[in-house]
Image (cartoon, rainbow, N blue to C red; front, side):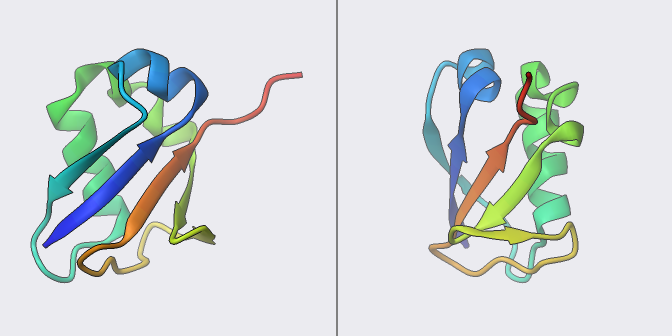
Length: 80
């Protein structure tokens, strides 16, 4: 299944794009998507563990299942 990934702030700077589509197995979770992205994009490996995740604009837990066409956003912590 295909899922759209959105990156914000430092994540966007690290990968050079604000979004991309990735292919995941049916029934994949947020945690599985996070692990795949960290593997494919080493620049994200250190950043993703501290990020919140949102699926279709609602905060999501690691075990949240994804569906085809979902939007998965990773939101870095805010500095202050």
